[in-house]
Length: 337
Image (cartoon, rainbow, N blue to C red):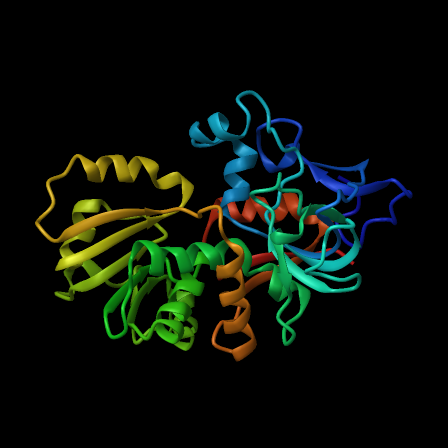
């Protein structure tokens, strides 16, 4: 994969450096290669990538697990060999029909609807894929926001229908989605937030806005006697039957993450009490408005990306391996000078 440290060499005029997955497998199967540099169509924007971030979805796309991933993104090999959804950078070129952005604009966005590709020196997508970057944060912080922030917002507003003053529990509160969910529930929606996370993250999660935090290594939150109007579960480490112990009589349990489809199927086979329901949080096609909401929260200082570590482009395999192992605080950021 080349040198472990340092920035990639400058690309040739019509090529760029990218981390490529030619087959499903482990992080060791990833290669840093020269690939064709994309060109902007009439409605497209070409962005010089300054930072990307890695989430659990990238691990699923690389490994092809669960099998449903292959049904959606290529049965025998990845349909999109350059992975990466979250991106932040600078507009380098754009099509003649683009009016919402200008050359030199600093932008961020979610590439998952447009063929992925963030683990590269350039990305190209329709202008609607991008928003202006929050002015008060860097490229790395901005790249940490899109997919996890959008998922957290959708889980809370669209699927959990969280209202001001409701009691909300975030399970997996120190991860990418969970850390955003704590902040959005407390600061944007005005909920009374409790959380579950590991030992080293307890104080950090409290700083993010959780009033009550259970350390899953020391306490069993299902035995607390607490009842919640909405439970957002980004971990799915406990059985559905256990989590039901903390659901209020009228409540919503929201599962987050592509690997949780099996949990949803299992829950559907259980008999629920009247007034309790389960939802599976998924991103819809219209995301730009929600990305603008996240941008506003970041500029107000009420949404602060939690970053576990930062690595250069050549270390993407190590970062994805770490994602697979779990236990991170927030997001893993890839800096691309």
